[in-house]
Image (cartoon, rainbow, N blue to C red; front, side, top):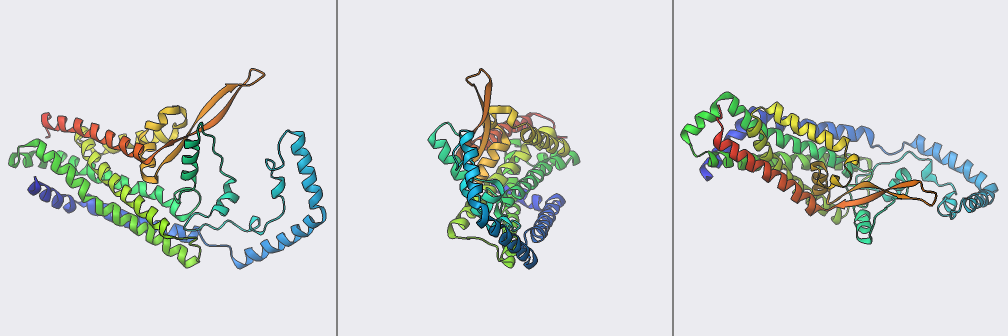
Length: 362
């Protein structure tokens, strides 16, 4: 088996698709760095001066009639049966950061996220879920930041690993080289597993180096702007943990690609199926209700990001008999997401092994 694995690894890295995948990863890193450089500069001196001027004017006006504005706000809240805090009556005083363009940082800035999105709301059915949702919302992979934008790009690295795995089998099937190979090594099960393991192991450098370059390019851009934020040891531990989970997911998806290539025999059909499934899961996720927990996209996001939140609707009749619906938060943990992805890969792989043992590969 080890001899077959070494041979398959050499064949994997000798293929043009693998080399083009390396080029694609480098292009992705370059485009990501350029986009970050263009979209993440801090406010210019002119913008800061304009903001200070507007703030000073509003501050002067606030000193004149601020108390009356607060009183009117509190009266309006009382009339509607709400508290002044719920209406934001205690946050009406002008603040300079309201007048400045938002500044994206490498690490999420809670103050900046509050300005952009407001105070995060949690509507869960128990305290444990509420605490888990709050932890996920406070993660470095949530909010508006350089790191949070990298998890979407990381999915593209997984797609590269999947495509490499698919093409590793389909190209040999369509060219007839796989049938020739089986005349030298007729034990089909050994051949299949050597290809699956070679795809899983061989794509690790693509995913690992690709994500390291993405993080490094993003860090360099924000460092040049002086907008890194609070980069602590805990942040780098989160990045390292994410990288480990990403590499594991890449290996699983590469092996899954081999299975799909075996089942469909054509790369376009296998990759197209993955694209359709992903689109349906993303576009219609909310309509699936509680089933969202088992969707492949939800599971993969939960595995990568250390947990993910999805919402369903809870509808209850009000006093006048009208149903009122509110969103309810649910959590998929890292372990649940990883097990779901692994179970899907195992099922598809076992089916592919059975097909490969019995079907003509020519």
